Length: 362
Image 1 (tube, rainbow, N blue to C red):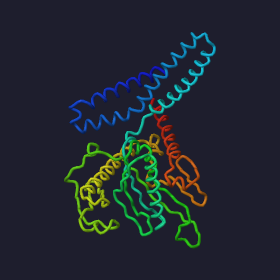
Image 2: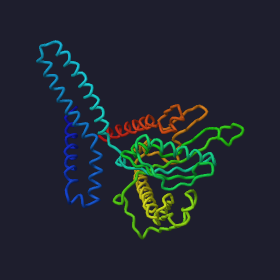
Image 3: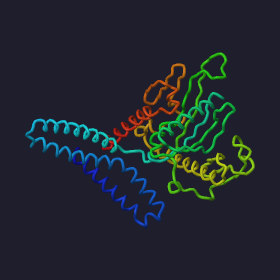
Image 4: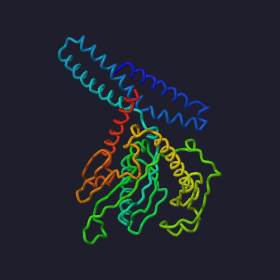
């Protein structure tokens, strides 16, 4: 590893230790905004610092093993030292590769929780059923990673699909994995209601928004109108006895958010505000992205919602991601949340773009 990279890693390690110290100071623990900012930066450095410390430990073990090998006269012990040295060098090479990826500039939102919005597109009831399939797919993926999932708002159809469903996914790195899902998803299959066996094509739109805190978005109380009303739909007789559903209108942006999933008005209001903050943050982020030149904009990490990103073809048991030309099979497994290999491929494509951008910037 060259000296410039080592100096950079030592600087990051010093900053990590400094943040550890700062977060324990009374003046920081009583200041939520500073504590939040420090904690986020600390978390963003944790993986690379731990890998660098592992690298330093392995490098020291290699040095010791090399010295032992040079001084050892017993051939059997020397052979054991050579085997250990080879294993250590392989580990060192692997850590160098991982560290080089860690040094590629990252999306600052990668560690955040997410809010996912799925809406049925073209295709009528079949599109609503497909939106429900996508919701269950992401729910299963979240379960596989021990992430928490909470519905914010949903409009179910009679056949069990969704015209729209909004939900939170809480877990470290959720945005870093889920962000690739924004865009139009297309399904090709024979609907259960199709008597002639004709294949239909339907779509659903997915939006993945990083969940943000109060300190990230400035929302003035005077810019909001909050309406409380009786929720409708599933939930039993209690749903309509008390007005708990919340509708928040943000006048400057025109954004309207509703939440009626909880039976507590306060919980619905908190969830609706979380969605509003995420949408406003996403709006500002998109404005910044628009200011970037076409050459610098990442098409993998910031897929437009109008862009067809993936096709689920049931007759051929095939899933195709059009952004990177990836085709995999086993749709039933994919819809059961087996998505890591797809997300890994998308992440690698984004990392490659970021590496090229970093190299071009010098």
